[in-house]
Length: 535
Ligand code: NOJ
Image (cartoon, rainbow, N blue to C red; front, side):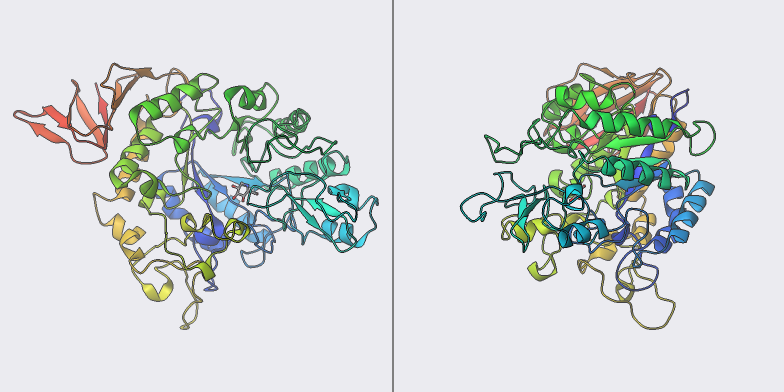
């Protein structure tokens, strides 16, 4: 709820669904769209404004679906286009928008156009849709340049006729050649395809990629970087976003789903690099990874928040504390800290993204057997990096081990296939059913926080716009800010209890508060605890 004339997305709480791990309707061990549809009531009760769906397209799943072999269909294991349409329609019944993940930097080696390129001769128009080059060295056995793959190893793979193709990620993800006009034209059609189905917008994968310096020269520093380079943040990419913005804006802003958004996954080394993506007529939003990257310390988090305000606000750059690419907050920061962080996330002005399972306080699963690991990072680094599977383990819905903790449902009496990633034996204790029955659970905290956020005039974008927060004086190891009207946020990241300020009412606390001699009015806030107060 924005409570003012801002577009819906400016203050939205968006729930990220990783479809293969959310809910499995047919017992094959893989989550699917009908499973998600069957659980929309849960998301409505949680109180989110939109869902961002990680890729559900046909894919050989070499990178969890971020290797797309058809941009305008649904993977048969996950459902059909008709299921997608049902999802959009039923989500609308709950006032929930659907945001689709668009993957424009690369596709899958199974994409028909890449297969055609492989079958065609070097120098052919088919190859020109991708970045094929001859190798270096006497027999071309050395890659064309020294660029690294984000998942480890080189960014080039050799094909049988001796040429190499570029892939900034896994070898199963060939990069498109955005300098060939057929590529931008194709993506414009893809955008329209999904917008015509009534979606609220896109999340744009590796939005700082797409264009590469045509010289394809060696980089001075072949270690991974988010700096502007020969392969990231090329100026030409902004022309693409201007075109896309015009397409988004050509859909009506009134009614449902309202103004369409596109939120770029832009990893940048500085605000100066990030800001151009938000220029007038470009992307409505970019992710704000500042909180996610900060350590659990008051100075670090305060710096993260100030860094955001130095260039924009939380409506243009939504706050996040987790996603499918990083270690879950409970494991990264600790249980109490993750609860306090949830209250911080949802109290900051603007929009917030919540990754599925964060509302259950799911920990990272750290003991997945090597043989079960799926993330290409694990393989490409020879196991040096375990990869991201630990944050993608299928959700526990109830305590029934026979149905993979309610993740898999079957219509027959037969047991479902094991989930695509193994769940820990004690997963049931984090389940929706268990937590819904416990007033002190993570789920209870998130539900209550979202309920208050929807009705409190100071929260979300707030009445006075996205800049409506004021730091208040606080000890070095505390965060303390006010939002108008009458809202205080206080978090204690130190080691000793912190005296509560004067307040009228405790709206919500991430853990028990410590009463003083006359009760909470002279009480204190324990370490690793946050509180929402009204004044
Ligand atoms: C970012 C996505 O979030 C991640 O999961 C994926 O592996 C890479 N982009 C490549 O598409």
